[in-house]
Image 1 (spheres, one colour):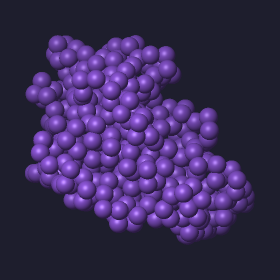
Image 2 (cartoon, helix red, strand yellow; image 1 turned 180 degrees about the horizontal axis):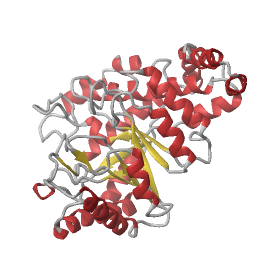
Image 3 (cartoon, helix red, strand yellow; image 1 turned 90 degrees about the vertical axis):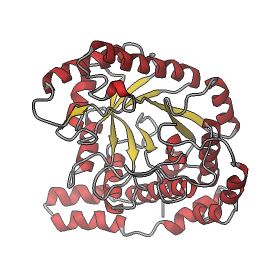
Amino acid sequence: MFSADQLATLEAQAIELPSWAFGNSGTRFRVFTTPGTPRTAFEKIDDAATVHEYTKLAPSVALHIPWDRVDNFAELKDHAESRGVSLGTINSNTFQDDEYKFGSLTHIDPAVRQRAIDHHFECIDIMHQTGSRDLKIWLADGSNYPGQVSMRGRQDRLHESLQAIYDRIGDDQRMVLEYKFFEPAFYHTDVPDWGTAYVQVDALGPKAQVCLDTGHHAPGTNIEFIVAQLLRLNRLGSFDFNSRFYADDDLIVGAADPFQLFRILVEVVRGGGLDAKSDVAFMLDQCHNVEDKIPGQIRSVLNVQEMTAKALLVDTDALARAEHEGDVLGGNAVMMDAFNTDVRGALSDWRESRGLARDPFDAYRSSGHLDKIAVERVGGQQMGWGA
């Protein structure tokens, strides 16, 4: 079913896991606890390594500061490597402290802005210790009411703050700016869309890129168009894969709309995002509120792999012919043929050839590992939002 080049692309696929996906999370009203939840950053790494062990798709783990702050990051790095994974993106947090009630990098008070900048300096110091390439910035900054703030003034302050952070990153590091069209601010958000993120990073320099979170768009947004545009502009730094039904639900990627995930990955393939020389980073950004966390992450990376395999099967020559001939339905049929191709058997064969279970999800669920860690991880404080 797959050519040698397509198999090579699948072989090289890597999807970074978020450490916070293994901690407790929930809704606005409650954070739920789960037996076996990690109590330390080291146990989060163990869980991420388990996902990689079963799938060979998740060789790195993104950290969140301060949630994953430890006394010795070199020790955490050594632990990760001993488990067969590496430490990846460092995510900053300027949305939980009281000082950031009215903003962080855009706050009108220079002392608050400097506090937020200093936090990013700490993240960069951690990157030097972990060997991480990317610093990811997502801001909750915005306003709830007309007249509350000067939107233009906040854009100016955002540039100044980002410039200070950008000037601190190393030659082999990148800053990745994430956008989100609303929440927690409801009237306006300081980085609400890809255009704002692009304008801000373009003013900084080539080491600044845009992060596209698939759940951070208004209903009906053509996300694959944004993917194509950012790839065209060489500014697509990374993906945060998840699904949503109404807003930023952070659900398992592909759960809400598998066809959308397929369309996104088609544009990734066509734009060279999976080429060997590509610098685009692929990561999950999910919270498992009611489902088990490790199998939730396994299901997620398998969903991305399956839709990537389908995207690789799109006959791009046939698409080009249909476009030149004005064959609207023919072009759509090419897309639908690839999407409707059942690649599960071929992927199972591929896994078996690598010594993996044909179905990693079922293999993990029947392994007894969840019961084992539930017994072992008794006592201490479970990690989760804010911990």
